[in-house]
Length: 91
Image (tube, rainbow, N blue to C red; front, side):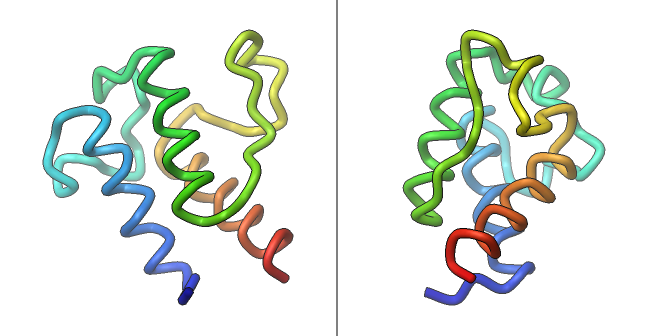
């Protein structure tokens, strides 16, 4: 599996867009999940899809998102977190 930064970005945006029922082109780096209309259930489904797509484990607690080490404040922060996890877990 090729896990270059551009491939990760493309796939993460596809997953988020699918969850938001939007086109990937509608998802910007500055978008928040709230902007995109993704609720907590959609977030959990997105995290599961991302974990599956990249064979990683995301340190996210859906019951206490503020306490998670994983930053979900924007698409850019989510992407940054995923890139780090992929690098760490697939070194």
